[in-house]
Image 1: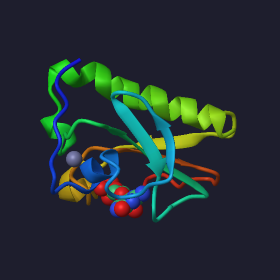
Image 2: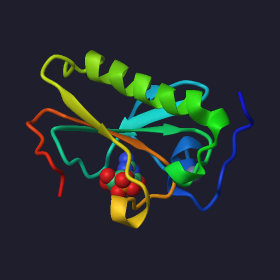
Image 3: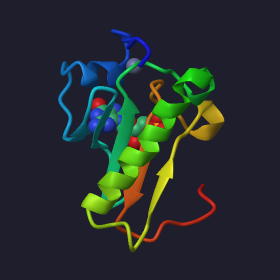
Image 4: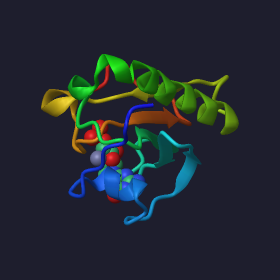
Length: 120
Ligand code: 5GP
Ligand code: ZN
């Protein structure tokens, strides 16, 4: 595992550090998942790497396994919360056109209602 990086100015690094509270759903040595403070569906979680990666563009090939693990954790939460059969959505926004507002990568996990496609 590569060394973990933290940015003291970053909101999600501060959540990882426990400086800002969050409703935690899952945690291991590399990944943290917590409920989104402004949910866009009946269930809305964010799955983040504990190491600071600003955008998907900044992820290195060496972090490919970590990126895959974000998806695996999302799936595990969806199963645990009972959404696997009905369905759910995972999405990662990148930069301004992608709708990214927090510059520490996070996988959204949305479930509990029929989600429209294409997104707005
Ligand atoms: P983005 O727009 O970058 O893809 O998503 C950022 C998400 O972070 C938004 O859905 C927003 O509601 C969520 N968020 C922003 N600040 C906080 C916070 O302090 N706590 C939690 N739990 N979620 C946050
Ligand atoms: Zn960060």
